[in-house]
Image (cartoon, rainbow, N blue to C red; front, side, top):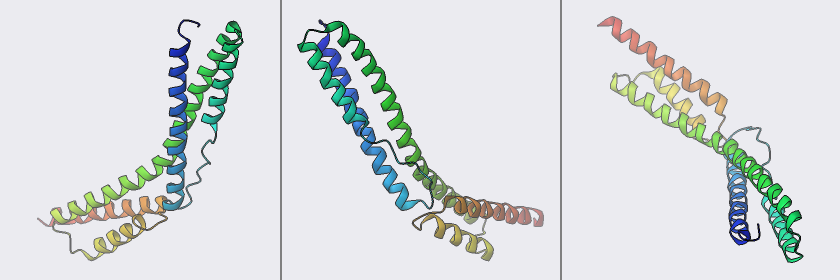
Length: 172
């Protein structure tokens, strides 16, 4: 511990910075999701994990100055474990919020892919498909976006394209 102290502290300090940055990103994604997604039921991301870890890291320095190496080694191991847990928790918070935004992006992409398929099949002027496309586009490009409704309308649009495709296939 004495020999590698500076290197160990630098490594943990970098991990604490990563926790703080991930917390900031999780809060930004959470705020964006609340603005852009209807009723996301997202829990509030963790707050202050990085600051608490930074305080614990500073306490280690006081133990080093007092020459309490054995106690410091035990607390250092606990701190490393706490940093890993905090980082995983912050990453999980970020994944939750970003996942909703990613889902909206995925649905938007699928809608445009189905629209291109309808055009390839010569169905771009089909009235029912035009109405369904418009409804899906409205839901997906209006904030806050209702992801459940968007998924339902997109599935309806897809089924309608398949039905039209089957009808034109049987007429040939």
